[in-house]
Each structure stands twice: as structure tokens, then as C-alpha cells.
Length: 326
Length: 179
Image (cartoon, rainbow over all chains, first blue to last red; front, side, top):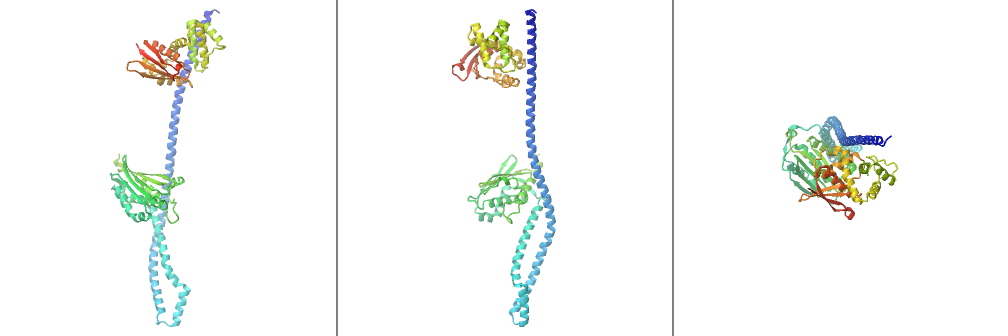
């Protein structure tokens, strides 16, 4: 074969190689772009997945709260009926006892007089001793008062539990939240005085807020009482309350310098019957109800807390009615 | 160094001096196979060895050879990557888009292409400084490529190599004046 034939064949091969390389490059570019799209799609999926997980946990939490709320409201309703007649019967029993007590007092007077023969006196005295009526008459008052206190507590719990299904539209109005906070502070004035807390107010929000004042006062009361309680044993006792406007919302902050919330309890503090107070001190319903009320106002409660340093509750509420913002 | 650079060097030698000379260079560099695949990476030293042999054969300093190769390489790269040049209409725009467009596109084709970084600064006088940074310090090649680009866009230029990595600087500055 001549050199020329080789050269032609070589040139052909070279052209073929360049074409093959071009093809490879085109494919590489396509591959790169596909991989880029895939990676973007993957990132998007990851983001969506993270959002779903957050939404799911919020849903589960809401569902849990809703079902516990429903159950509690049902139980509360069932307890309410017997509670009503127990309360009324107790009042009646007290009246009956007063009548019996008058009789007993009269008998005691009789025993001291000379109107009765000694035989009859000893028979009566024996009966009084046998039935321990002297002790009963002195102990009754204590027993009755404790029972009544207990019933008041049960009644309060039941009323709180029944709270959920009741937010009446007619109770809603445009309200000055600052005034509401100040009036709530007045209600717990004696607690504040006893606790030796320093109060700092920074109420700058000038807008009225569309809300159910009675409900919100309960939220403020719960949070303020919790804050005071948290500072019982701390050296610094500063309760800071502030309001400010932020993007069509009001932010209400209640901060204390108390013992803070343990990280483990963050998730639980809004659960019903969760309390860190000693038995008999708290029902564990305060924050649960507060959460429910704020949610019913299309708002949110956020907590920041550092153990040993204090906690801050931030309530975010829309300034306007939901349909007015549209 | 990517195989495509070796391919274009081979083309240049074959075009100017014939196939035999390229074969001789391969022999002398002890490259028995002499196969270079465009997308594959090869040792920089192999290219430097080729340049050394060519310099010896032509009795020219390496900077001159490398610069001439840069000029030739520009057209070789354009022929192979026509897509990249589709929207390039003038020399100044092209030089300023090397880092932001050309190198990005090259990154799509080759894994770990070890590209230099290029920055451009305009002067009030109308001149432009192109700053080149690369651990390979192949500034003569970069200069050749700029000259090749000027030929491609039909633009006459004055190019001054003001600052050089081979003289202790961290970068090379080419001052370009458009005539």
C-alpha cells in the first residue's frame, strides 16, 4: 500500500476519533445536566421531606391534644353531674349538722344545769362518751372544710377541662392588650408582693387586638403565675413583660429569671396534666389551656429557656380578624 | 494535563513538520504508544518533555515554542468546542467570560480539570489587565492563547507581560491594548 493510502486512512481515523470525542463530550454534557437536575430534584425532595416530618409531628401533636381535649371534655361532663349533687348534698349535710350541733350544744347545757336527775345525766354522759361526740363535734368543722376545699379543686379542674369547646364569638372584641396585661398584674398583686419580684414593663404595641379578652386574661394569668412560681427559689427575681408590633402581629413576651425548663420537658409542657409542681400545687392544665386559647386566636406560643437562667414565653397573635387580613 | 492539549500539539507538529517529526518526538520522549485521549488526564511532565524536545529540534527558547503552541491551540479548542463559542462575538467579552462561562462549561465535561483562574480589570485608558493564576505557571501558554483568541476574533492587540510568576509574583498580569 502506498503512503498516500495510509495517509488517507489515517486522516479518516483521525476524523472518526474527533467525531467520537465530540459525541463523548455531548453525552458528558447531557450527563452533567441530568445529574445537576437530579441533584436539584433530590435537594427539593429532601427539603419537602423535612417539611413533611415537621408537619407530621405538628399534626400528631395537634391530634393528640385534640383527642385528649375531647376525652377530657367528655370525662369532665360526666363528672360534672355527680359533682353538682355532691356539692349540693354537702351543703345540705352541713345544714343538717348545724341542726344536730345545736341539739348537742343544748344537751351539753342541760348536763351543766340542775334540771336533770343525776341518773339521766350519767346516761346521757355515757352515750356522749361511747359515741365520742365531743371529738366529733370539734373535728367536724375541719373535715367539712377539707372536703369543701377538695370539691372546689375538683370543680376547678372540671371547669378547666370543659373550657376547650367553648370560645364564644360574641365575647370577641378589639382589645388593648397592654391594659389587659396591667389588669392581670393587679389581680395577682398580692402574689407579686409576697414573691418579692421586680416587675419590668415595656408595653410598646399601640394597636388593638381582635381577641377574646376573658380567654387571653387566663393565658396571661397562667404564664405570670408560672413565672412567679419559677422564681420562688432563685436569687434574682425579675419578671419582664413586653409587647411590640411585628408584621401585622403583636408579640407578647413574658420572661422570668427562674429555674428554667429542662430540655426534656420542652415538648411536654403544653401536654395536659403535665406539671413539675408538687402534687396538689398544680393541675398541669394551665399551659395546655393557654396553648389551646392562643391556637384558637390563630396565634402561637414560643418558648426559649435556659436551665438555671430563666424562661421566655412569646405569644404571637394576629392584630386583625382572620377575614380582615384577606 | 488533558489529552486534548497533546492532541492539538500533535496536530501542530504534523501540520508544520510532518508525521515523521511527531513520531521522532514520541520516540525521544520514550512514549511508545503515543496515544492521548482528549478527556483523559496525563502527567504535566510529559507535555513539558515534548516542549523540551521541540525546542531542541527547532533551536528556539521554550517560551517562544509554548506561546506559538498557545496561538495554535486556541483554534484547535474552538474547533472541538464550537458550542462554547456560539455566543462569543468579541475578544474583550470572551476574555472576561473565561472564568465565569468557559471554565464552568469545561468543568461540566471533565472531572477535575485543574483550570487556572483568570481575572480581568479595565483601565481608564481603555487597556485591560488579565490576571492569571495557576500552580502550573504556564503563562507563555496563556499568552499564546490570548494571541490566538485575538486572531480568531480578527482583532489586533498589544500584549505586555507586566508581572510574572516566574519572577516571584503570585500571579501573572498581561496588559492588553486593543488597537
